[in-house]
Amino acid sequence: MSAAGPTPVPETAIFDDNDQLWELGERDAEARKIGVWVYWRPDGSKECEETWGDGRTRLTYRRFHPDGSVAQSGAKDLVRDLWVGRPRWTRLEGDSPEHRHWPVSGTPAARAYEMTIDDDGWVVDERLFDAAGARITQGGAPFPPIPAGLPDNAFLASGDRLWVSQSRSLDNARRRGAYAVWDRNGVLQERQQYDDAGAEKPLRREQYKNGALWSLVEQRGDERVQSFFRRRDGGEPVLRSSTLYRDGDRDREETLYDEHGVRRYSVRMEEVAPGHVRRYDDGQLVFEAIWDRAAPAVPPQKVAYYGEDGALLVDYRSLGDGKGELRLHLGGAPQALPIDDEADRNKYGNWSRLCPASPTTRPTAPSVTGRW
Image (cartoon, rainbow, N blue to C red; front, side, top):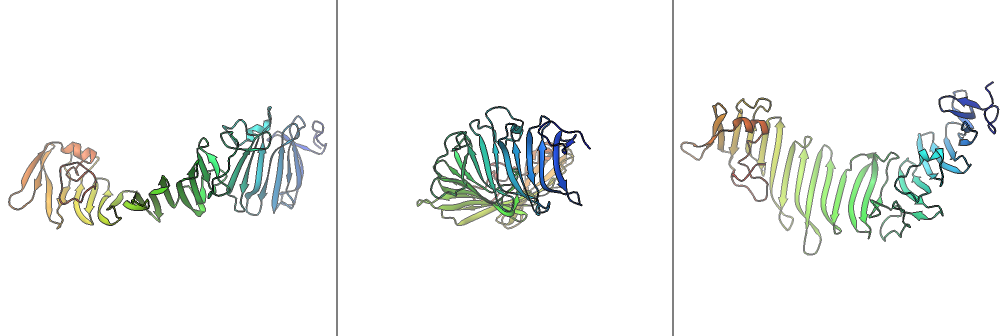
């Protein structure tokens, strides 16, 4: 029989050297905890009380401050291994070993924190309370009325500047379903949609300015689409541009729209492999380059620009010793533009300098205005 612990620890309690606690409880034939388990600190103060029932179905627990007041309480679905219900934490004015479990930082006035966990183990509501039991914000101010139209689980965050509604994992690493952010007056700022299984990244993300949609990102399997919007005179959003990302963002196609949301043209930039890039305007190949990034001194295998009809417009010929020429093919003998920075272009991938810098107007031929 083990030595008796400090009063009022029962003589039948056993001291756990690993946890440095006295414990008392039963186990079934399969060594599962069953019934009520109680734990005491070395000084004899009760630390925790657990109710396991049959050890298979449900666990409820309470942790205690040394003065005997409840420091934490909660419940767990043992069948699915999920925390559920409404766990609650309290903090004393003075010191307590239980303060190491206090989950809130940056709100000195908070004395109680509780969350609501749904039946699937997701946190759907969070609340802070002061010493008098009144609900307060993360900033420590009295909790104001939730603006009309916002869900009941909305809370103030980011220095009490934004309202947030979410369903998150206990470790705050994943969300599921709808996530939304509003300003202090209840004007929508952002909305995200996650899958039902919970994920680190949303399937859809909307951002708003002055209450109007201006940015949208959608995940479509392995592809991602990012769209931007302008506002009509009446205030409704109209599509301004959209970019389709494929192959880990190495292949991107931007489509632009006029002030009425009517498609104008598209520009696609594709990295086929390291040192192999292509550009397409409205689906037509207009540029391709192949070179060895790891060997800048080696001449490129191919640098070519094409017209709208697919005919070769410009190509590059290396002359050796790091020099070469861009040749313009417009019928007759090619016109040549000397190039003396072949190695630099190889090293930094600057062979597309004759392409427009950005697709702001429909390109009809390569220009010398920049690079993409």
